[in-house]
Amino acid sequence: MKSTIEIKQIDITDLNVDAIVNAANSRLLEGGGVCGAIFSKAGSNELANACSAIGTCKTGNAVITPGFNLPAKYIIHTVGPIWQGGDNNEAELLYTAYKKSLNLAKENDCHSIAFPLISSGIYGYPKSQAWEVAIQSCNDFINDNSDYPISITFAVLSDKSKEMGEKTISKHME
Image 1 (cartoon, rainbow, N blue to C red):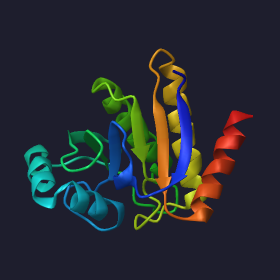
Image 2 (cartoon, rainbow, N blue to C red; image 1 turned 120 degrees about the horizontal axis):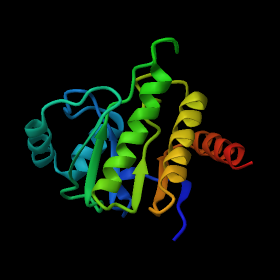
Image 3 (cartoon, rainbow, N blue to C red; image 1 turned 60 degrees about the horizontal axis):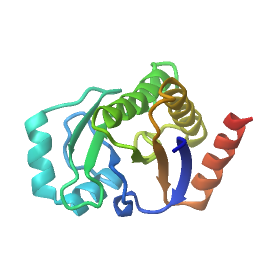
């Protein structure tokens, strides 16, 4: 199997993959957006208890819980940076959030993973720049782990986000 990166216009909670990634907050509490949807579908109480047992997660880091009622076996919770204009290590922290999520997937023998576009919602990271960092980090992981096949899916909800991501992937494949 060859490693792949693709973008699907789908609710991330519907994907039957080894792990889905939650764009979490540092206290690992149920939030809105993708995070709220994941908690709701996984089972809010079970997931809240699992997250509470872990405690916190720093920006750029990742932790893992069971997937509970989701089709995915695991939920990897990663904390992306809040956009503050680009001069506060946002790109490095976002890159690390993807990298640590992928490393955690590998450590748990996950060969398929689904990401949202981390930090591009309420955290305000500009979508085009978020795509650049996301695709670069995933490509680097694939290149650094050529002996570990993984299928990486980005789950997006809008046509515009899907098109932007596909353009970014094409640019990185040149």
